[in-house]
Image (cartoon, rainbow, N blue to C red; front, side, top):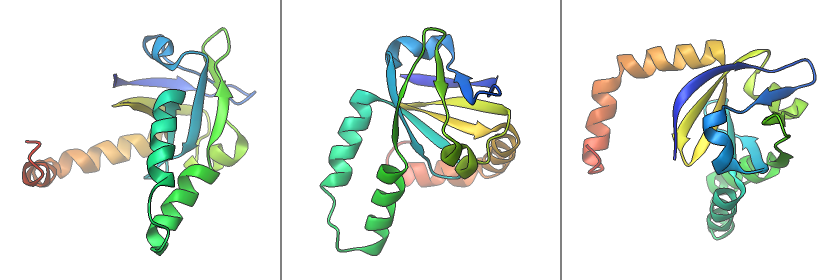
Length: 144
């Protein structure tokens, strides 16, 4: 399980070091794709395969479904984790998420998210302001 947030930087060769805490679960290959809210998602291959199977089984009749499938699958790339625990972030994904140098890697249960540090801080402030509303919605879902 991935939890916590870590500040890192992307080096000039577009490499990002994955926090040591997460490396064993990721093994030596991951899938990186466009995420929601203009961040990137990193999945262990096993989890990605499960998600891709679910996406592939969705009905294609709805425009929103097709768009989501395209967003996730067409943006995905297999990435090797090097011996120093770094991954290469392709230009098209860096541009999508607005990543420059300073990023936050957030552990979100079964995936990691890569955020531009400034965007992450803005997102957290907004989420914290709306925490009561978010808790109510989770309560309706039986989570809280």
